Every structure is written in C-alpha cells, then in structure tokens.
Amino acid sequence: MLRFISVVNALVAGTTWAAAETIDVKYYGKLDLAPLACTDITRSSFINRACYDKAQQFMVVQLRSVYYPYCEMPSASFEAFLNAPSMGKFYNANIKGTGMDGPFDCRTHRLPKY
Image 1 (cartoon, rainbow, N blue to C red):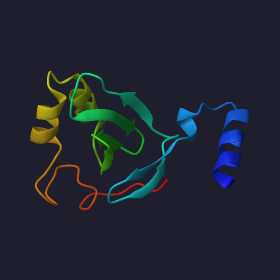
Image 2: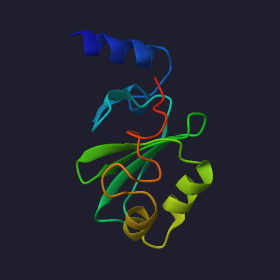
Image 3: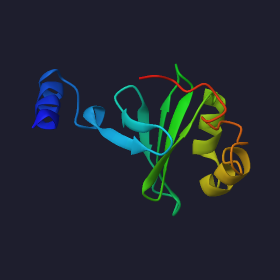
Image 4: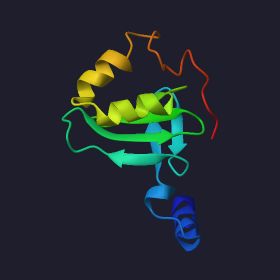
C-alpha cells in the first residue's frame, strides 16, 4: 500500500512512472532511478538497459535481468559504452573486471548515496 501511495504522489507531483521506478541492484540494494537517466538497449542480446547519473558518475547496467552498479565512471566512458559498435564487447573489455579489479567497481570505488 505504501508503494502505491508513493507512486500516486510521484504522479501527482508531475513525475513519470519511470521516474518513480525502484530497482534492486546487486552489491547495492534498492535504488530509486529518479536521479538517473535511463536508456533501454535494443541492439544487444546481453545488455537490456543502462542508467547513468552524470553528477555522481554512477551507472547501473541491466545484464539480462540483473542490475549491476559502476562507480566513478566519467561521462565520456558512459557515452563510449552507449556508442560502441558492440556494447557487449566494450563492456567486457572496458567496464567489467574479474572480481574486485574492474575500473569502475563500486566495491573499490566511491559509492554514491541516494
């Protein structure tokens, strides 16, 4: 019931349903997407959605059905990811790590608070 009231309040305040969306992010927990700009990805079989907050340099990416966080990612890196000929190859080569060594891994980089 509380979630319904929050959605109604968000709609009354002039925001959209997408702005009121809350997701579960691995290693992070619940995240309200209102401060992030989200892009649905249709040209990749691996990546479904990418959301980015330029002010916090924070990205969440939906890989199949799971959202993953990436911290201290410059906007140029996010744009390069969106514009890469193969987003999956770019992700694997430039964003994803092998454990806690990724260039934007939130377990080793500043995690924003929302």
